[in-house]
Length: 222
Image (cartoon, rainbow, N blue to C red; front, side, top):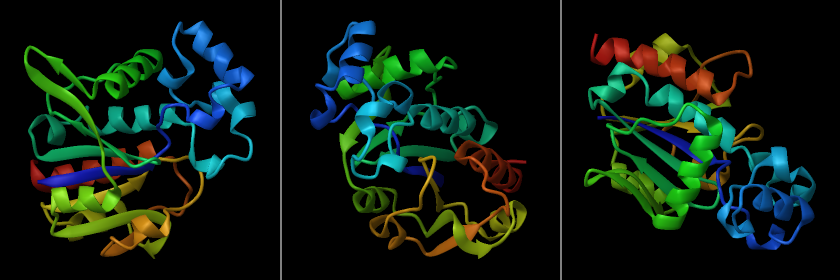
């Protein structure tokens, strides 16, 4: 089965060191939640996030939302030929069942992920739709056990969506960064069998995902 990992994703709850900042307190009050129960979001918490570690790679849960909508709304996913994982910047891993239907509204998505962090899983009619566990990237790769690990990065060797799809096996794992700026950390890159750049333009992650999965889909199920 083809796997997609959205790695080092800018998705996390507000860290402890920021929970007493005025911007965090204000947004928590707005949503009637504790500061420790809400997602870190640069739109709300820009002032609080200044000078925190890896600032440019954090606080963009909306980006992860876009990526998941692209990956989980296509035939290759519905036909159980693609498994999707979100690996977060703080080493949590979200697994998605093929029957999950993610909210199109970002605010509903944020509420769902906050509930997932609180409860550890989201179930419906006894079926586990989403699950989150503490897990680093290396352990996730061991769990997936792919035949090939391909990282997509602007720093990689030049290729095209079509060419990469032709070279990608059905049991490969494609890694896309779930952050707005920056590059993969060394802890992530060391697992790649190869690193590829599929576009000369600095496109957003969800566009890269939609295009490469479409090319893979044509080879696998069409």
